[in-house]
Image 1 (cartoon, rainbow, N blue to C red):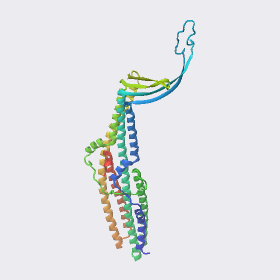
Image 2 (image 1 turned 120 degrees about the horizontal axis):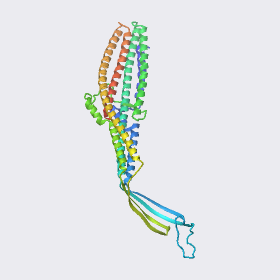
Image 3 (image 1 turned 60 degrees about the vertical axis):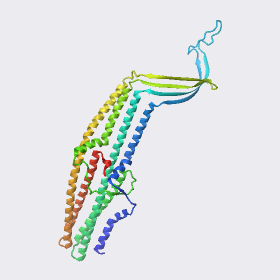
Image 4 (image 1 turned 180 degrees about the horizontal axis):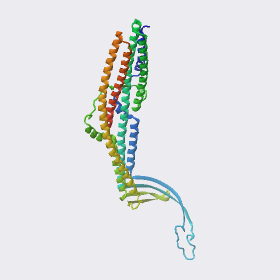
Length: 449
């Protein structure tokens, strides 16, 4: 078996897993923008938040029922006995005649009655009910704002998973390139040995280099598979869904407001869902305090019932009751004051949290802008190192092929190129992660492209 044939077999063994993977089902194209918006729509975090919003809206409907009329109907059949002495029944009798009822008490009955009637009630004026409705609506709005926070969090997690999947793809491509170079060097060493102008040590070095690169390639494939699992999980997709990442790690897209930090901070204060959610919670707390205080105000309700009552179903008489009720709270053991104090303390806590969050937003935006600028410079430096390392490999390989040097210099240069490629991938990953972090800090992760 000649050296060229051996090198081709080794190359085929390294590339075969990728070729087999390509024969699977057609992958689903997926850009970074697609990923963040898909996660913002269907991740488990967002679905849970949507269900909490539905619960809050149902509580609003429940509170609104206080303003709608209530109507109930009922039928009663009963038998009643009375002790005449207990109720003070005493009918005078004629002189010399026994009393109509025993003065010591006598059972009257049983008396059977049938009662069929409907009951209706309607709130006319109840400030506390209006307050509770307003507080319930404000609470539902706060919960709905929390759904936006969940969508932003899900989008940020999906973006991070997408960048890691890009990194895994780039690492695999780099290791495949390293493998091709190692196979080429082994072929040269074997050809020189066969021609009698090389030494066995060069072949051994090349084989060792190829074995090391092969181990790195296996690890890179495993990392890629795990990154795909993490990405599918973040998107709430079936874990075996094949994905084709359409965005390149090496394309450094520009970032809006990257050069104007103050404008970015101002935009973040307006757009960040967590800031808006905290503001909604403050409004809900204030509405709750108002609702509790409104419980001190009088309320007016109308009520009425009507139906038929009688001793027998064949002899029922119409009966009704109606009226207007005014209720005025007087004393409640200071429970309302205690509840107001509790809600005021909760509102002050929310105010402290809001002030702290606004400070954190400023820190997030400024830190992300610093990281982005540093990452961009690191990419430029890493690209220059890859260029120089590739030039070094080319020069060392030419010397080796010319027979004026062994392959030790080539292997050393290829190791340097391997490290340079890894450094570049890490720098590009850091830039993409910084770009995502800028979007998260400004509250626009779902608008990433």
